[in-house]
Length: 541
Image 1 (tube, one colour):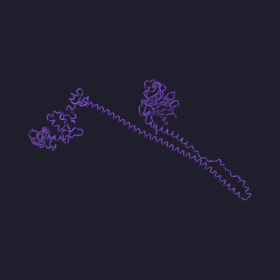
Image 2 (image 1 turned 180 degrees about the vertical axis):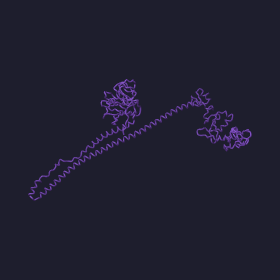
Image 3 (image 1 turned 30 degrees about the vertical axis):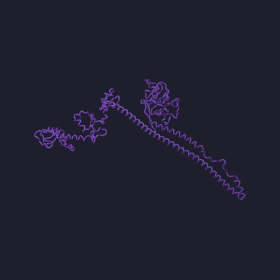
Image 4 (image 1 turned 90 degrees about the horizontal axis):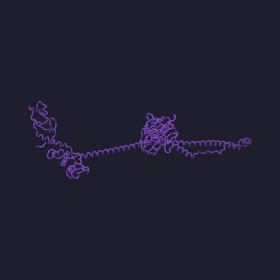
């Protein structure tokens, strides 16, 4: 039989009804070819039987016969098209072991032949009776590595004792008493383990990404802090430079004024001396002129008035003293140093207060911790001594001796700042306390016991420590700021209105949450009745 011309296109083997490649082609009496199904359905829908191609009319429905030659040519064409359409092997795919030249992608692997086949070369396994019995599996690369070297059988099992892949025959020999499972089962278990490991690794990656972000955020905050520090430093230095320049101008002006005063005194004395010289010169001229006269009468009449010199000052005691410059520079520099120190502290305190105010937190008072004598506002921002002990349920959180109340919020890291108005009060206490802590009975309220606080009473301000630290009280305090750097172990107090630093406790060790606390002090017949008020921060430029 002549072979089909594989260079023909699909149109040469297409049914004119379905326009697809012939499927069971049959021939009409007029010689045209159609798919059996297509021409049968076409005639089923017609009253007359005619050819769809040439319209030749048939009186009776023709008896269709299979076109054997065309069927063979269509089959060969289909195979050639399949070969052309088969994709060549891509990286990571299993190639056909039979293909020469361009290798095509394998579609099956034979565990008997130990060969992988593409569609074309797999055809004998689908047709030949003996090959149909071979075991075909999904394409596998390096089939020889998947076979047991000892028994030449597929490695289908896994020995859990020796952690190796084995074949069925191995279970009757060296691995007889070992627990053996199918590869798929072990694969699924290992995959699950790998999934868990992957999840754990992903968590570790995420934790490290979070840590990287924390570090970057810290660097960003550090940069921002550095920029603010530089700006604050420039502000302080500019103010100090301005102060030095003013001192320089004042010092120069003082020296110049002293010199001017000396020059003015000297000018007055010189003018007076010159006046006396002029008068004496005139007197000398008169005397000289009289001494040369020969008129006896005139001489005698005039000489009596010229015998004494004109009245003058005694210049032996008169002197111009230079200004006392010695020591003035030293005294002026001492004054400058004192002024600079005061100005520096004022500016530094102001800049520091601005910086810590940026860490303001919103805190409210916890009524469950308040001593029964204390009254809290509805918004939890104010507390004062009510004068009457309320009947409240006791709990482990409530103070029973100290007239204190804690905030609801606690802090275990980072920095925080809050302000409390203490205006019109004669006694109060505020700070931060470590929690949990004993709140029953009289307590020792020092840092060693977990309390960092300042107390105002009897017109004195102290930081409670052992011993207590007396603090300067410049004027009546109106508002106190409290700043805590948990990680650095720092607690600082500020006079907000005066914008000065009061005191700092450094080198503190914090290992538990810190709670801000307020103590409004005792109430006596209207005295100290004003509340302590947690107030929002008001930033100043």
